[in-house]
Image 1 (tube, helix red, strand yellow):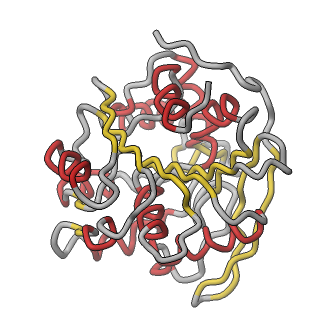
Image 2 (tube, helix red, strand yellow):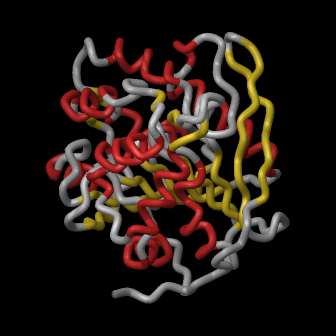
Length: 294
């Protein structure tokens, strides 16, 4: 097994927020920060559809001696506000929020790690002229997304949403996130704890707005998502990480991403589906190697 510099294991993040705007009004986006707040080297880590910033806690602790690590709760998730109009839950809103966040951080450039939806946001930003993204890691996502995989993911968003029985809630979370293929019980406990939130009645609910999937439900009425024109404009060094069993990022799409646009470097995490979670030393090492950290 790969050995990883332990960094500041156990370091508690600083909890911050930034005010953002959408067509339906203002909202607050929460984020967590590890490392020296004056460090000009910033890594922004953005989670997937139903996840939140705590997904990156172990990775951030490992990198925080080298980077100021920033992990936002995308609006509608974690500690961030919910949108008044659920149709605002789209990549255009998310990308605008991230530009607001980067401006608040006071840096000209950032490195980017995006899992699934976080990678889509990264591609949208990296494909723009004068993008603040210096280098990018795309975690199990590409310019073409399978409708079948999206239907699987959207199918568990918000249904069920609340659980009267805590044990049943924990079992369900473990079931739907089986593709993560976490290696230890402590990994599963950490993931489940960040996924669920207590209710006033003593039960548990998911730690996101159940309406985040409404725009996606409409998107599923169309064709496979095609972001190749955006990907082809990306010029920054790009690492593509694929779960070997992923149903969202196909082998063919990953290979094409190595030939087009930024000509990504591909690394495959065997025996993992959608998506690698950067809790294990070998997965964290992939990030450290790309960022050229000892």
